[in-house]
Length: 191
Image (cartoon, rainbow, N blue to C red; front, side, top):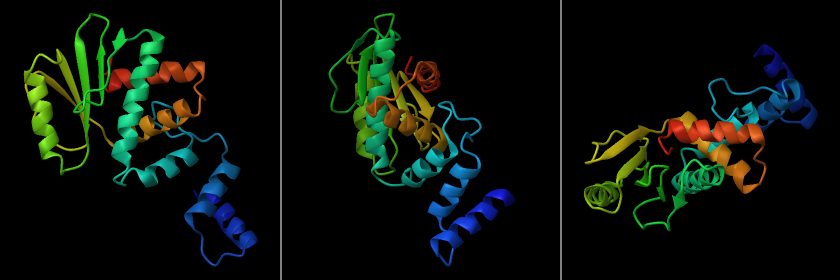
């Protein structure tokens, strides 16, 4: 830690800054420890990416990013053969697919506390014949609707999902990332 602060002080002095800001610390980490990874991360995220993604996790737009990430994760798992058939997206569900046993599985993401209406809609879906199994990914405490699996998505899982999505969109998924994405999907009860 002291080494990073030392390099950050040198960087800020080189840049002519009076204070050490986040960008200087980030650059110092990249320069001092270029291969440093976050411990406990499923996707093996570099520390600099972790810091950048963590900043945006509290923004309201992060729910949209998470929904896109879950959809792309389901696409990748489908390409790898983990799930059989992706269905067209339902308005209330973020992903809808058939698992390897032929059961229809719906995935919904609820992160904001203002989503009481969405929780009611999703509860109604779980009671109907639209899905056989419902997975709700949430960062808040909610009651489990009928026939639903609640998965707590903490900050580390959010960051893993967004990091995966950034790599997927940029077409930078490597073979080792496929294995990690499969583990991430299992952790989120998608497969």
